[in-house]
Length: 94
Image (tube, rainbow, N blue to C red; front, side, top):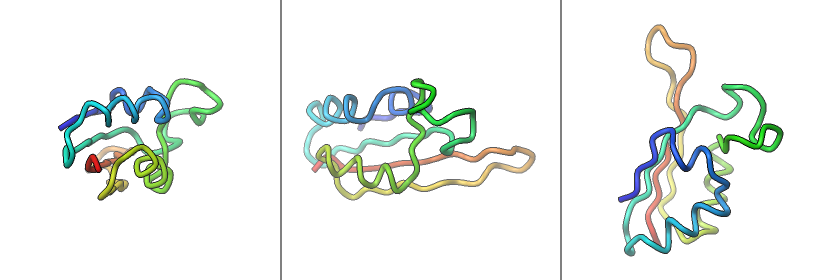
């Protein structure tokens, strides 16, 4: 299992990171990650060059293209008293 909690998946271009992660995983291994919802903190990554807070649909395209299947990415609402939720993602090494 590879786990990224507001970490590498959020700060590294998926076209660079995902192949590196996948080549080190066994078949059926799980990649799980979280980050803030897209656009919740400043400009988009393409404009800022710092974050890769992609939408669930974008992740659904990136992950299979880099050797992952059973992709599930969703937005989770914020807890009571908070304004921002979380993007949660999961995929299996195919």
